[in-house]
Amino acid sequence: MKITVKDGTEIYYKDWGTGQPIVFHHGWPLSGDDWDTQMMFFVQKGYRVIAHDRRGHGRSTQVSEGHNMDTYAADVAELTAHLDLKDAIHIGHSTGGGEVIRYVAKYGKDRVVKAVLISAVTPIMIQSESNPDGVPLAVLDGIREQTANNRPQFFADFTMPFYGYNREGVTPHQGIRDNWWRQGMMGGVKAHYEGIKAFSETDFTEDLKSVEIPVLVLHGEDDQVVPYGITGPKSAELLKNGKLISYPGFPHGMPTTEAETINADLLAFIES
Image (cartoon, rainbow, N blue to C red; front, side):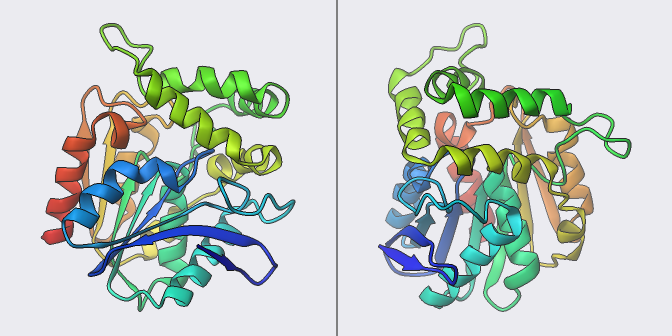
């Protein structure tokens, strides 16, 4: 299904089941399909599950403009208003975690009861004087250059650190790698290129401070994409009603590789 938001962009979404709604927000450069394991788990538990493809990603329109966190959040606000979601839980992975907290802070007051940030880019990723341990601009520029000019091979290679498949003793699953690549290549290169700035340079500090609902922060301690030390604990500290669970050895893509553990912790939080 699709909705057309105010600037004419079509946003694709899946909407399965009935009951309390759970909305899933995917990471860069993927699509709503990255949540298959969670969607199946929660629809079978009696929840209504919704996942959209961010503008420029997956099956949504490959538009030229709007690849920034404010527009991402506004698109979600239009979708949730269209579906008239109430008492919703919003769960975001990586870039999707930033999208969740920006949406909840700006638009979610009467619609959202809980939120979850998984391997999220919050509060801010890029290195600066105020964030000296952040990711250097040179690293992000390298990701930009490879995305713009070498996307098919770069995306294939990126799956190794994403899932921790480059660690000793870890067996890579080719199907998982192929599915990541498939999702990435469905999206538009301009959206992916500009999305790097959105996920790395957006400061979510004030969003985190302003949110009063319960927020669960889940982060793998061996995250090679969004480093644990500069994100998970700092986000939990800024939240009024935050809870942090960290996982020794878990990678950035832990909702897929460690789905049994993550799903159980999500369910416990949702039902608490």
